[in-house]
Length: 361
Image (cartoon, rainbow, N blue to C red):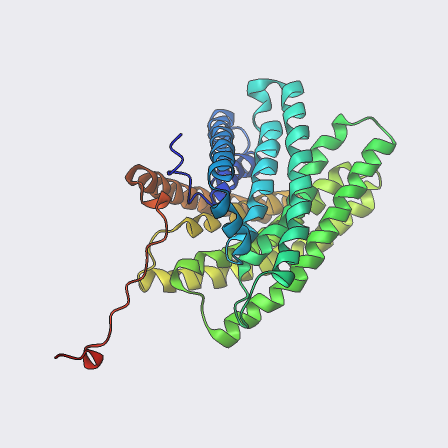
């Protein structure tokens, strides 16, 4: 592998894995019965994860200065949460979709390993990135960003995907510990999200829209909303006190999904505004994928517990939006990789003096 190629490969690239894996997982939840297509997407996500793990390991080994610079950059450090979510997303897709290919036993083993690793890394990111923001990073007033959600939403992904492993654990203490642990991860992520969202909205109201290239990051707010709805519904399926948890899943999930749809409308309007002003492709376009996919699984979970057909159709509609966004982001990413543009370093800004200040002799 050419080490120069990976010098500027940041942790944000794991978003491509997350956005691909959720297409398979959300599809199996919203539109079951299309196994071969979902298995192909899952396989693509798994291969992409392996390639990125090798590339990022090479990045840390050969370019430690750049890796440390990423951690010191408040705009890049939150993306370290994407590594944890990529592991979790592929693990969940392996169990829900890939078991037909590799077998149930291998799928459970792979998901268990990836869930444990992803959860550990997610907890590390949820702790370390806020610590760095407080003690090391210099953050200007009014610079709050939806990207700040990335490290703290990782435990919510663990909470949403952990319940699938519960039936494969020994009955009794092991299962109950897993369920309560997932609820703890749910609460941890939810309360941290509630700290960040007001700062993000305040920044938008008082300082105006995000820069064009960062506008897709507004969709990241959907992540904790859809994923928390998914988590409570999945946990209700395996909780030992299922009746009460099923009621909580609906009472929590319905209003949160309502707010998610409101935010989706706002974010979509801001994206249309950015497109009209010339927003070009950047890797932030992957924010159009995974967060929307969590809303698909959240709506499908609510449909499962209420039997409401409208929620099923909502899940299907959101899934169509997810597939379209994934296809566009994937095609543009592949095009940028082939051309080499996406792996280039930041270009220096040329400063040109105004003509009125140039002296002639």
